[in-house]
Amino acid sequence: MPTNVSGLRDERYGEGPDELLDVFFPTDIPDKALPAIVWVHGGGFVAGNKADISGYMKILAGRGYVTVAVGYSVAPGARYPTPVLQANKALAFLSRNAGRYRIDPNRFFLAGDSAGSQIVAQLAATVSDPAYAATVGVKPAIERARLKGVALFCGVYDATMIAPEGPFAGFIRTVMWSYLGTKQLKDDPRVAEFSVNRHLTPRFPPAFVSVGNADPLAPQSTLIAAAIRAQGVEVDTLFFADDYSPALPHEYQFDLDRKAGKEAFGRLGAFLDRLANQPALQ
Image (cartoon, rainbow, N blue to C red; front, side, top):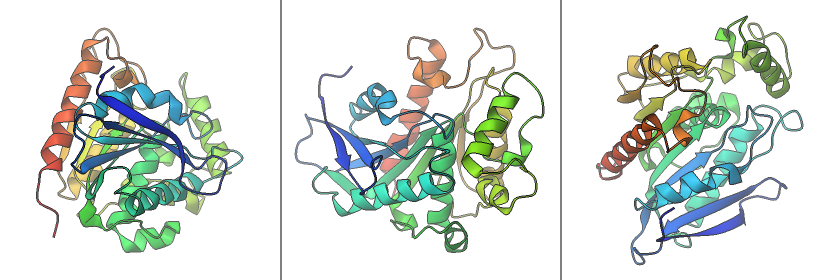
């Protein structure tokens, strides 16, 4: 862990019991507003905690960023689109309190892993498209020009394309039933709304997309990368050959003892550093 990073835990961004966030920042850059990485954790929409990603947030903060781990309510107690609305609320709170947390309010990144990846992809799409925002019921917390990019790890982006069989398929169907409240993943309008790959526009932010070669959700990452690229938007991908060894499981990127995890961290850092210093979108 970097020694130049400090943090604030359980900062309240809303009134709900789960509406808390953790903020990490480098202590050796005291007088400068920094770009912020707002990260939504995974857990299949039914589990997980912002504390799970604290270590990764500290390491990212050591690169010269304010990093934020966002807590949110999980299913089945809180169903779609509650986490998207909460992530937007957290973004609004951080924008209002940018000075307190040494955040440059014109340089936000959204990032997430697994379920969190879908949540931030959907939030980024609402920031980019007022019509989609209205459909989801989001009043975007920031203007598109202030969203520099999005990082998506190991997510599910189209619920209708979940494989009908395989060791992970039953779990994913159960998770989606819990989150969306329906087993009819091809017919319910909320499923089409959830499937963010169908709601992208050319104003979607530049994206970094990665997944392990042994992740059952790997086709979903290929899908979202192609959908973003089809809009003429910049996409940086880190995918691995089918025979890459050792095989990389779901959430491979958090294992920084492995070569692939280190490569993902380096590629993510390069993506963030480059976009953090680009002129604002007009």
